[in-house]
Length: 418
Image (cartoon, rainbow, N blue to C red; front, side):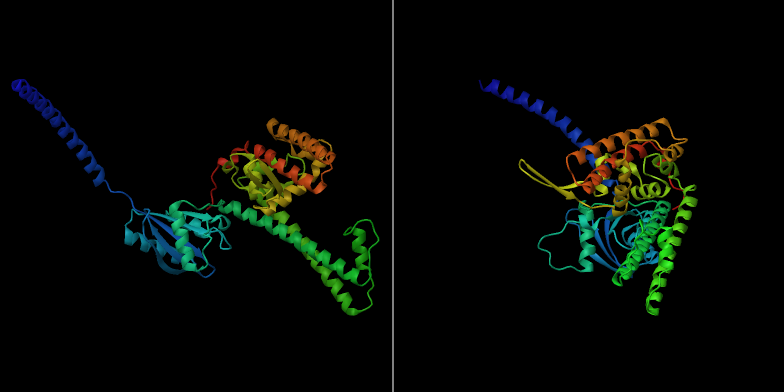
């Protein structure tokens, strides 16, 4: 019995030793692979937070890792040369292979810093200030704290970037906004003039204001005091100057349209009812790259046309529209939606704008007319206020615009200018 036990023990030891021999050989190969992976240099990452002001930029750096150090790196001047020197110092201190990721909040300083950092090989995001996480207990706010906070949140991936347009697209957008500013200035000047005359008892009895007959009435108006004549003339000069600004901006918009890479998208959008050159250029320039919108509802939310919602459990409460987003394009779409209150029809002007467009674009235009007019009729049948109905029509119009612009290949062509 002892002999049997010792023999079995000896067989088990031999078997175990063979297994251990193979395990040792395999573990050696595994250890060699681990050493090879360990010897492979890993690129270091740094996260840069920039608190951008008009005259200076407060900088901070967060090292990678959950417990990486977050520290201030000083204040630099708000110019591109100082920014380049600062990036060069970081690469000199941490190595040329270091990966730099930067961010700053969107504001009046624009996208020039982001574009220059991109040229220097630095990934830069311009983040939305309204979507930056904030602690409820924070009661101290300084520029250095803001820079460190941006660097830390960028490392955690908690920031929401905004869209950075191409330089040419941004220039066209600024021209469109300048034209809208001139329209606002003319409207304010007209309101001031009418208010001035109303205070002194002068009321125009004609059918429509600011027509040729109304302008003749203002020019022939006799006022009792010389000061009132000066005021009247200054207001009239301001209105005329604003009108000339509008005309010059529209001439520039039409001239630059032929050289713009998104000109095919503008012409396709002009095939929709209610969109001429100015309106189409404003919408296309404000939306930018439509490929970033995966669904029409994202366009509606981007323009602030979706209703607010407060849903809890099985109760759903919806209120007014959010108005969070691009106010310029939202105002224009509500104005263009007025045209869909009339019955569907391809007028002579619309037919001229649709010349040369493919059948798919014309089909979308006709489908939009039928859908939006019937929707408007149903909303009025429910005794909904007309202004609210127009906002609902503008919201659905976003879906047709999204579908139409997705048929254009010009969005896949890179801009030549930087």
